[in-house]
Amino acid sequence: MKKFLIVIITVLGILIPLTLSIYFAFIPNLELKGSKNQKVVLNNEYKELGASAENLFGKDNYKIEVQGKVDTNKVGTYKIKYTYKDGLIKKSVVRNVKVIDEESPIITLEGGEEVFVCPNTEYEELGYNATDNYDGDITDKVKITKTDSLIKYTVKDTSSNTTTIERNLKYEDKESPIITLSGNESISLPLGQAYKEPGYSAIDNCDGDLNKEVKVTNNIDVNKVGNYEIKYTVIDKSGNETSITRTVKVYNNKVQIKQGIYKSSMIYLTFDDGPSASITPKVLDILKETGVKATFFVTCKSDSLNYLIKRAHDEGHTIALHTCSHNYSQIYKSETAFFDDLYTISNKVKSITGVESKITRFPGGSSNTVSRQYNSGIMSRLVSQMNEKGFTYFDWNVGSGDAGGASNKNDVYNNVIKGISPTKTNVVLMHDFENNYKTLNALKDIITTCKNAGYTFAAIDSNTPQIAHGVNN
Ligand code: ZN
Image 1 (tube, rainbow, N blue to C red):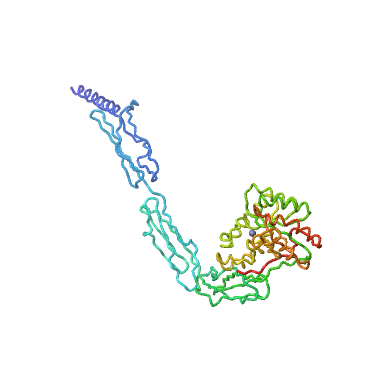
Image 2: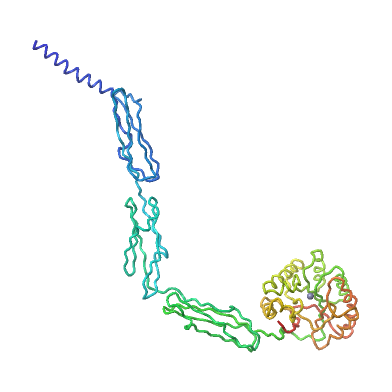
């Protein structure tokens, strides 16, 4: 009996653990793939690694349910639960996923990290702002600590990422004063007229109003034609200096005669307002036949007449500029309008002849008063700018009257013959506008008479003494 019990116990002692072992060998073990505690950086992807269930025999086709979600756009700790169920058996494991913000806030300083402060003044905060990738605008969380020469700006985001930046203060005035001129930077002054200072002001970032410290120097001689400079200089208390200039142009408002060789018994025939289809070709024929060179002050006409400008140029005449539009109200309204118009005809002539003409004539002449109704004083300014831009303008001292008083070819002939003189440089004003037959028909006689009297004809060039009227506006 005793022996029997020992056998039973022994058998059970072997069977029970064996049964249990076999039983447990069939229950799968649930294990996480990857670590139990995972970190994901904000806005990065969370990769679900899953879990595996396996029994001792490697059976692993258990269905595992995954519960929980990770919001990677939001800082926090998320729990993911993995469960498998098989009949009565149920097992779970949990993974902790932490979404973390590792980015520090950014502080921006208005005015930069180095600031110059006027000596003996207090620094006034120039402003700053702080932004964080997660918290957004956290400017109001910035803490400031300040010494005389250093300001520290510190800010911490909700994940305790901290940023500190510094601003250095330098007590120095680095900025120069600013001088502002009243009136124009360039002033044209008629010969002999006193210069009147239009005024100026000076201001400094640290010293304020420095008007009284401005030193003005000039070497203007109002009795001598020329360009003069007025210099305005001011120095602030820290030694920063500013200097600016104003130009004063003293010009001769009576007569502007270019210095040149005096040429007596010379006649310069000039034809304005062309070319025209009816007159210009025939004028060119007569000039060719008589061997006379002349000057054509052309305006903008139809491109179909360009060949006449080309022909006149090729035959040795001077092509000069009389503005494109010849429209008083347009060209005399401003200096800009005038030169825009002049450069238009200049470019046109250059494109036809290949030569840039520098010889000009004002519509109505430099003495015209018609310009007054469009812009007071414009002729004085145009005359000086014409010279500055390298042009030489020519008026005339012999009128043919062909655009006004002369009613026939005899009038034109008589006006010219009476006007010319052997003791001056004769510049004769005529026109080759459309249908001006009275000039065309007088031309040959004028040339013959003058040649017989010993005159020489020439086209205006850069050596021709300038004939200019006085300016009346
Ligand atoms: Zn004209």
